[in-house]
Length: 484
Image (cartoon, rainbow, N blue to C red; front, side, top):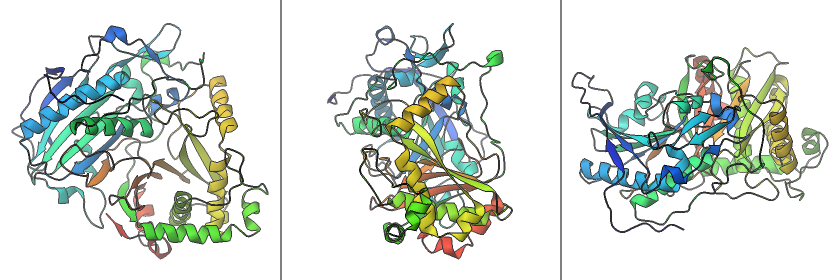
């Protein structure tokens, strides 16, 4: 454990240009200052190159992760608030040194995180939006105001490969006109997955409160050394694999703990029937440790409900079209032996469950949930290592997107500590929001409910006509508490 110091010496901060945009629109988010923040007390020469692993490199074509939190008014002068955040950020970066580097491609094609004295730093922005309030962003029963929300984050839609020339992380504090604040964090997706992202966020907040922190496990590659490399022609690197400017509607939908319990009970009552084995291809479902398991989780039950509802809302799909539900699986506890839950980097793989449109329509919720459950349970140590070996044999970027119009992708997790542990010293967060990164028709992200009672918020990104039909689907809405 690293104990937080009681004194606060001058942080490792280099002032950058300050800009005041007097002609900005009244409803805009305006950056008033930018600072370069360096890790406190860490020598770049003491930290060697960190090689990207076989789980990191596929993410080079993804946008940087953009997530942030709304907070109530802090009740302290803004200058003091900025100073506190910057000082704690400098100390947090010393615990997570890779976040303040840049990418470098070696002569043999390997990509590494390199910390050099010329650019071992991150950017911290202070922004204001005096004409906006919390109510402009957290609208009841309305779409997310994406044109406003995007300005809460720096490095909008930056592709992770661009970490060769841009910082691997950036941060922004935005102060609204009603005194509420938003703390935004942007991180290169080839450097962190969601678990690592929120570990850093928690560490930063904890240092602001003077709490001890849990250092990450920096042993980057849990599969051992790899000779696989990704090569890009022309030196420009990859582009995202989806149409980033396709029209979308975005809405955050709340599912209460009671609704989720009802879904889970409905699903697991059915698993005692013979159709459970049928949905699992006639094979018994087993946990990764070999123990038989027939309980379908709350989240799998919720995902099955969403899968069926969104597919119903895509009315142009043919009955024999194959629809795919993808979700990211955390490999940390699934490997044998398991790796540290504090492993820092990408330790995720994507798993896909498929069914035809007709199968989803003709079978009930329990059938769909059983299919999802079987896919997740089957992704054990052997499946993880086979997927890694297949990638090494044919390296490629992860094909994020929805090319056939029939796919859904669930990101993030209601288990991430987005509210718990992220009190910077002036109260519990009020809401989670994300930027425009990695959003396309069918992309969803799951957040824990703000109350911490087992409820779940799901951020839906759908084609406008699909969203309209989903919000008019009574079967879907019967489990929705409210859409915010």
